[in-house]
Image (cartoon, rainbow, N blue to C red):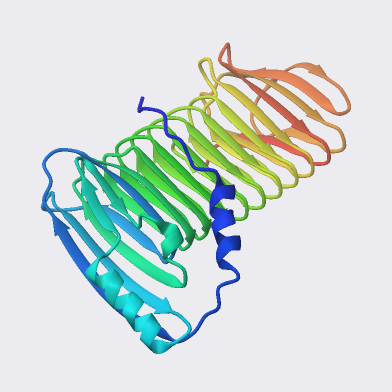
Amino acid sequence: MSRHLKLAAPAALIAIVVALAGCQMGPTVSGGFDRTLDVSGPIRLELANVSGDVSISGSADAKIHVHGDVRVSGMGIANSQKRLDDLIARPPVELKGDTLRVGKEMSHLHNVSISYTVEVPKETEVSASSVSGSISVRSVRGPVQAESVSGSVRAQDIAGAVKLSSVSGSIEAEKCGDDVHASSVSGNVTVTNAKGDVVAHSVSGDVRASNPGGRVDANSSSGSVGVRSANGDVTGHSSSGSVTVQGNPSGNSYWDLKTASGTVEIAVPSDAKFHFSANAISGQISAQIPIVIEEQGKHSLRAHVGEGGGRVEVHTVSGSIEVQGAQ
């Protein structure tokens, strides 16, 4: 497992937005800068941005390449141009030892938008944050942590652990070699082909996890939850949305599935073996595959499929529960 990653509190980024809200916008000028730096060995990238999209990827030549597209506004065109010229002459790019800092001193960048394209050696650890803009990280070793207040966050082909968060934006993680933690307040969360555990949460968005290598903890307050190709423990909870899980709960797996006002659908292969317990306060419980009923009430069912296996427990308040064969 990779070392622990700390995510900066989203509230700290929101505070920056509030601080910048009173700044008046004026004439806008634009330009760009490029920096190429030589390094030897693994590095750590620390990137902080107020406004602008960020793209980070592993480089083909094991060097650091930083490109910035800059837009500056101010009270007058001369003032804006001077600030732009100063930024291009002295861009916020600093390499100290094995640490690359991009966008340092965010408080000095009022009324400045910089979109970064950063290429780093593949053996790089990444910590990136943005107030207003999307973040994309791909093809690096990691671990990776990335967060945005207003923008999507995406990670792809990361060898280590990944932690992604957004207040207002979608989250995507694909082909990560270790655990994935992904959360969004107002956006969908999608995690695909993670080799480790998956923890994926959204307040008002759908949550999807496909082909996880370890356990899954998926939760949404007002969205649906879907898990595919699950072969380990699954926790799937939704307050006002459906929960759908496809996989095999055999072995020692434990599936804990709950929804307040939505249906729960389970799809399992023909050779699945598990103990099944279901409670639906105001909904029906049905099985489209052969089961052995142990105990049945008006709104409850206890049964098993095959001999031995894992446990599947399902609870709904106002929704149906259905068990069917995998397609």
